[in-house]
Image 1 (spheres, rainbow, N blue to C red):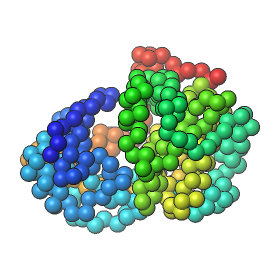
Image 2: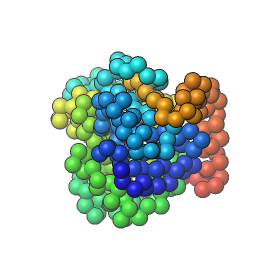
Image 3: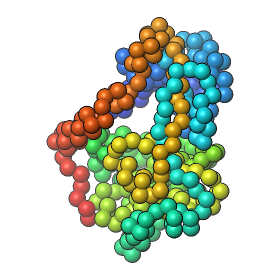
Image 4: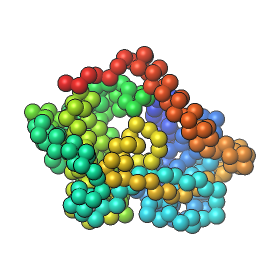
Amino acid sequence: MDTPRKRQRPLQEVLEMRIEGNDVVIEGRLLKSVRLEHEWHDDIQDPETFRMALHKSNVAADLFTFWQRYPSSKQKFNYTAEWEDLAVLPVSSFEEWWSDRIKSRTRGLVRKCEKMGVVVREAEFDDDFVRGMVEIFNETPVRQGRPFWHYGKNFDTVKAQFSRFLFREDIIGAYYEGELIGFVMLSNAGDYAYLGQIISKIKHRDKAPNNALMAKAVEVTARKRIPYLVYNYWNESGLTEFKRRNGFESQSVPRYYLPLTMKGRVALSLGAHRPVAKILPKRFVLRLKQLRAVLYTRLYGPAPNNA
């Protein structure tokens, strides 16, 4: 077991470590859970063996959680499970997506981006690209109504963090007058491609670069004959409508929870392992998100205006 490493995210601390050759993270404060760091790409084949390895390592966590990666959706294991809703786009060909899965409005936004002079193409992860990433990350401290995880990072930090998995990633950039205004990190996870990062400058939002980036991501996924494109979770957020308009749909996979301590067993028996957002009524959660967005706008100021 390697020496644990701490990293800060807004409102939480994440502990990273390596157990039995697997990178894991420990999250939570009152109730700590451990999971594979790269669960979008890695599977747990033998949960009991892995749980025993966690016990031997004396990992400071109450629960061990893992899921079945899409497209495996039928529950395999007899453990406490909750269902995770993923945003999934079946991909057969770019032409099928363009003609049948998206509507004229979305096609119009992709065409608009091109007409306004934005060039979307596959890119190289070189120093110029990293400098463009840093500019995008540091445009605003708040995105989607919450503190932005990558805000404030410098060139060296971004280069080190995003160069780790280039062996399985395709990089797509959106350029306007030679300036990188948006990009996609498209990861090959085996049975599906995964949109690990899709982001653009807010001041260029009028050019709809994210729509053009998504179109290119679908094109690359189809060319590589990968049957699905996954874009994180399907939930009621500001991105839900964007996902829907680009042909994504909700698909569920089971997430399992195994207790490692007495606190973990009690939490599972009481249902306290669920995230707060899944316990509270959806209407109340949406209201809290709205209030959070207002709070951070007051703290950090409004997002940049369109150019």
